[in-house]
Amino acid sequence: MTPAHPSGASHLNGTLGVVDQLALGELVARYALYADHRDFDGLKGLFTEDAVLVLPNPPKDLGPVLTSTGRDEIAASLSSLNDIPITFHALAGQVFDAGAEPSTATGHVACVAHHLTEREPGKPGDLVWHLRYTDAYRLEEGTWRISRRELQIDWIETRSVRKWRSGT
Image (cartoon, rainbow, N blue to C red; front, side, top):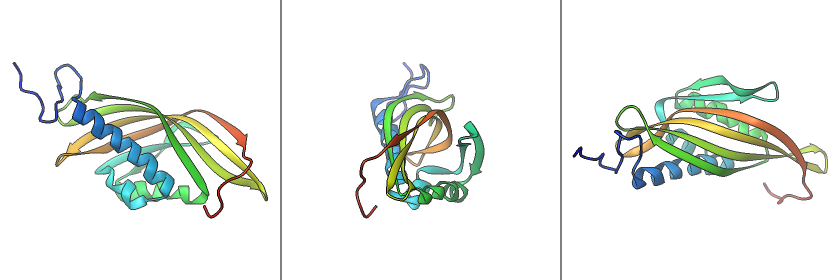
């Protein structure tokens, strides 16, 4: 019998143990939370030092085309969220698998990202992205981090908004 990974992962059959599944779920949930709260230091800490983030360039390109490498460059890229008064990243589903190498994993995360803006004075709107993240993760000193994240937008829609919370 082959000994299991300390966290319960079995890299022989491509599955992850419960502890790793929960930790990876927490990792992607924190990404959404930190993005919505504009916690760029928190976001940086979710990535490996050599991480790569590949984002779309909507509305022209919905696929991953803009690459940022390293924590500082990734944080600078994500700081464009400051241009949007309110975002809300609703995770819709996630699947994690053991990676090809020990202490690695892959993930597919579905998300609906709401971007609330004032399109014209007094008329708030919601730009909604239905998107998927394709991720690679690495376990570093007992902590899972994102080593590569590619964002693909499947479709974009706009919605009207009656009212939003003031002070945001």
